[in-house]
Length: 493
Image (cartoon, rainbow, N blue to C red):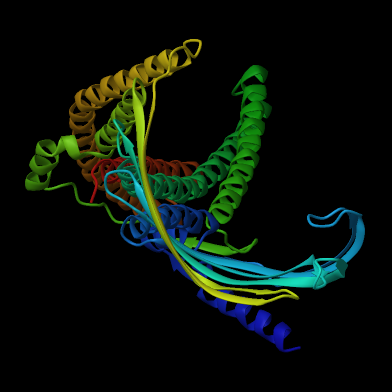
């Protein structure tokens, strides 16, 4: 019951706080909801967070050691064996009970040069049973007893491995994670801008679809009005039958267009609801957004001067650097390769042996060290290494050319985009004047219609002119917002 109450409260809170909960929705609030609350917006953020977590993990591993602990629980083994043992001439049946356990703690630290240092502590605990003979004073065999070998040993190992003649894989892995994070930052910014453009498109498409529906209804009413009067004119032989039939056909055509406009409005509404993850059947009230300001002259000069830091160029640069690093690693892996290994270990513990003739207890202290240099030189591998090197060279050359092309395209695209933004801004100023003029004419037409000075057809024509002006304004405003978002996508923060 408590869970059901929490679900109901959560659902109620969502409907109350949803942008479509009976409150007018602005473009800013719609985009904020789209980027922060919807499934797609959270997925974009999640993908970016994954890349950041991977870089943080690689960075931590670059400075701090990897630590692992492994152990086995005590193992008990009971065996029966009929065999000949050393010191016995005849086979015997021996029953043994062995207990053993092992454990180790390992720390591995990456080194800037590409090698690694490993510290490992091992603990070995073992109770082993084996048969031993019992002999009399004259060395005659009396029988056998079970001897026990107990070992309690601990060892510390220190090992250093360093590849020679090769690029440091540790540094390469770190730089790769860093580049992936840089790419993720750019791709996150671009993905948000693309999603924002989808939101702008859906928002204005819904506004325009409502205007289209109003236009289609006005045209349908006007066509019905004209068809009605054309029928009267045909009966009075003022117009021909062909003109009358054409008038009726126009009326049907406009009625069908009104149905299409209504269907289009339903489609755009559903698209908007689906994009913003709103409840089905939400009462969506949209406000026409204000005209956004164009970039200032100072901002424009800064964008043109910093065009090499645009998102397209930066992505191409990172890809080129990754390809260059991969090429360097491939080249370093060819020819003579070597690895320097050095190890040192110390061990301490106690070994106890219980035999019929004596009891032995010794403390063990051991020291070992080793240095080795391993060299290798590939003689023939069927051309695989050469093909891999050629592939990496082509990848790098392709990435380098793409980087140069991105630099050339960036300035041209930016100049065109800035020019288009300025043109649309100027167009919006004229279109708003046209809307104001059309609205004034519509109000005058409504007053004249109320006093009987103009016909219903004239009123519908003025109303249609006003709606067409609003549609032109919204269409241009949509393009203007999309261009500004494209500029935002290109220019990194």
